Image (cartoon, rainbow, N blue to C red; front, side, top):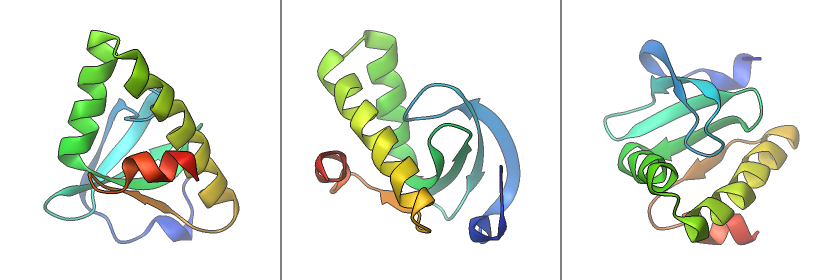
Length: 100
């Protein structure tokens, strides 16, 4: 699963639900406000920690409009990884990235 493109994260890794698909993923801190997430389905991406928490809340409350956008983001993250990149998801760009 992980490879050399996933370097740069600090702190210990923890297993938590992926913010995009909800499956078990490995989370590490990329910086003070950003998580590096390694998911076998969505691949590897970075996401603002507060945004990840709001996505978890959307899952808990069954917010269908957000959950539909998360499916598009999941595909965008995997596609970016498969093309040799890594998606960086933030509060200002997450809706646009899902449309891409």
